[in-house]
Length: 416
Image (tube, rainbow, N blue to C red; front, side, top):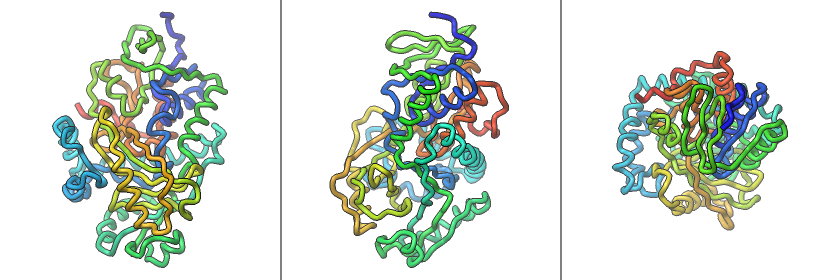
């Protein structure tokens, strides 16, 4: 093994976080190589709903979710589920999640999430311009649809919190909703529209474009599964199944697999896997004019250049269980009911791993074992949303610049 050059960085992970970070590091003049077990855009970055959900500042861990969780967990195909055989294994994570639902912790998590969202929103359009992907951005907003006044009023405290953090929105009646998005079932009587909710035309195409841009700018991408990191005096040994490489610094952005790599540094980070499901219908399946969120049922319907995507929900089932595409089918049946004009035929089902930490905040910061390793993972369903901001923060950490926001709430060591 050759000694690494001082400016050599290896980024582990070729999803949207890893490639965004790699491009930000390359822009600061560092030599960058990205390693990934499957290659660019093979995981959750390829099959997500394509949203830049900057208004989604409320953590999943909250008193509201505790009220809904018992009812949801009774439905094996509902918005939140845990396979019975996996329940004993996930119990420690669930206990941390329960503690994170305490009101003061929720308040602190909301403040931290807002800071990261603002950083990511500010960084997004300059990042798109620098990577030649601005044409992929859409600013169609998001319509949250409610079944009746009771569900709408139950959501108002959350909107009050958003208002206190400067988020713009408009509450709507059925007629106003129809003006924004025709074709909703009359069961939806109230709604809230957030214009600051952006999207990308095709998340897979976007990530592949980032990979191409990185290569054009002199970065390298290789297919290799990283099995361990070993700090040494002059760098970090990156152990792969094909051999060992040396780097001056390493960024771990391997999504749901990141905690396995962190464990080789002696660090146990409670990362779990939100297994997300969706179905992508052909173009023209519905006249969708904005993203529509059915929050009471835990899924969204999104217009992409590759079709109409119906997906969401949370299955906490780890990395090794086979997909249960009955969940995709259940959401599709509901979508057909909620959008009566939807043509639900010809869809392509998908399942992907979303990396989730108990307090709904990602881990962004140095490893405990060495400041030559930076972690950037655990964004849950907000990886695309927070990718440009996280890339800026990773570049700050690697180059020793002051981070754009306070990273204390995102410390990978906060769960000790």
